[in-house]
Image 1 (tube, one colour):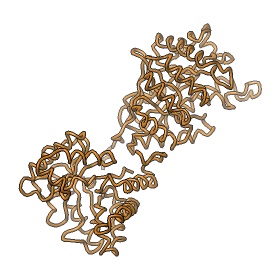
Image 2: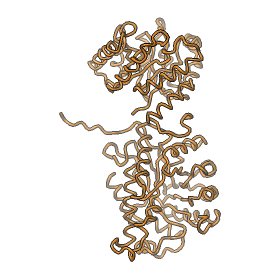
Image 3: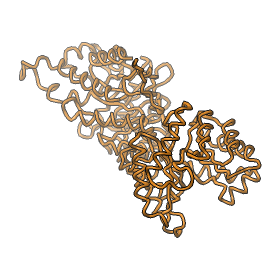
Length: 261
Length: 316
């Protein structure tokens, strides 16, 4: 079984440092965060430039080139609501280390992000929702099927859709967490790839509580068959949890120093 | 529906390791398919077959072996003769005389013998593997001395163990640019751990190989083969870079030490000649180790070397 894939989430315009760096085309903050995440075990880096309505294409091209040229062609997830910016990013993308990821499509207004991925031989993160939060797993599965059929009609390989079950915040939707995990298992049973923004679950919790919640949910999701996640690779407890889960799942051979590598 | 063949080629590959000097060097590793699966993708390098000699000379009670080495009295003559064994890619010298449980020769004397052999082998066009005594304390002193004496010859030194890897790695690789084998005696987790520790010392991939342990077929060999297999699968299918070193298996010592290769024909006439039995033990063990995924085997008898080399060539 393949290794769990970590998409580093820390180059995100929600961070004031990154927002400013993107606006001023200042390389240092992006490169520093990119390197930190790769050193800690990220495979992909998410490059989230926000809505970027005005100069999204320029920003995305600049960001893709900057990260790939300086960080050994690191594979990237291109993350924005500006479709043209994703296309622009892919136009300068180097595939040596892996296909670009389009982040993200859904079964509603953003179904055409799958077309974008298909036209560019990219991976698409496919959010199992249409408008807002899916009611239950039947609805999740219906959206999953819709996107899968659409992608296959366009000639995509099913493995290039990474289905996101839509992580729900525990504070307020505690009763939906088990169902969420069951859906991950359904995806896994179907042999489909999956990804999730797991830290959504701990949103609104005190800072000192979030790491343990994120770690435990991640471990449980991995056992259910989750194949990747968008997360903070510099969270030591979370990374230790993932490495330990990989050992218990027998996807990585144990050595006494396994936490250090 | 027509059958569509999907070659099983992995995105990861085994690191290439080269030892020996110009004109007398070999490379092993490099594979990105399961062992001997040349139908999936042609392996970059064939598995290597080495011939083992001891600094105490060959067992002249074995008629064929004795004939092969006849007239070769000095250690350098024996080494030169070993170079001529058909199918041998390298020669492996066991510094048996330095064993504290035997003659306990000094490390300096043993290193001088190693030098003599290495010079003869360079002339014979074969790269050199040096096997220590297996005694942790003695090897810790001996291997650095050998590394120093053979400076510039790019030899492969066996073996660094958990208890002595630090000193051996620093002296052999960092100071004298030799290659080393990390020995883990059928402990798969230790195999990985040793590689991690050696890497943490700043030793680069390409400078060390794995010696995962050995046993003769029928004598706990299944532990060896499953260890070799699991390591190779982790290296390739899980892209585990702490296990992507090529591995070398010393078959000779174990194969010639089991009952089948030891008891005389006088005691067991129905078993036939002892030499034939020893050769068969070597061949069956080496073939199985190669099928499990080892990248190099060390054998003692020229007949076993030829048979295994022929097998490797036929499957290439």
